Length: 344
Image (tube, rainbow, N blue to C red; front, side):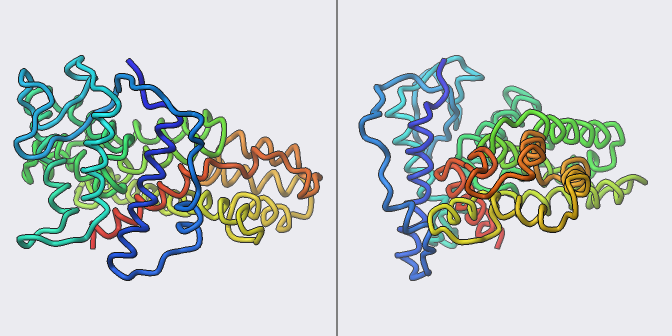
């Protein structure tokens, strides 16, 4: 089974950016320079890929079926071992994501609201047929493959998977010490793994985007929990959540920095800011170790590379210290903005 190719990921990210531009034109909102620039960029047509079968989930519209033998409101090769041609997959994704990008209202419901109801219905049906753990993993795959937008929307899907969409079950889980402790340990382990294992800034950006819904869902449980440790852990994960947003934005600022050759809060600027705030390599190391160990701000590879290049001039810095995939960085920023609109 195949995951999406790198080229198709770029095309997907470009589609998200272009949808935001079109929605801004429709509503009369201002369009940022970075969105204009990315929308004008072209994917290399010489890399065209042939049709292949996709190992990624999709959500079906009302009355829609992929296969008459499958009656679910969703399609996921990880659960039913059936694959779908890439051209069919992308057509259906484009239709769905266009709803998530729009604030159009019809019959008292926004396009975003309708899209979320389809996501929630699919996750709920998955939970009833395959169980809680499979339904939560399905919701994670939807998030990672850009069928859900922003951490809060996916966190709500996680809660649907974990509770069967029952308010009483939500409150019961929030006060279940074993559940809360295991969820806390799992997210802390995943955060540690992401910081340790990310090999470049694009991988780091994707990883923190991927884990953010778990942080948001856990905070929702902790906010209403009566357990003694709940307040302590809520403060801890609130700080993690507060670190993730600027880290995602840092990658977008990096794209703008490289595009316009100006200083913003990107990765290159962060390197110089931390260096200028340090009197020596020892102080620089202490500052970076705090950001790595005590915060969710930088991955291990970046810290180690920054220490090696403490004395290196700006012109000679290795690209790994500031280079990100622009399609990935800007599209994730757009998805996060859509998620904020969905909350409002």
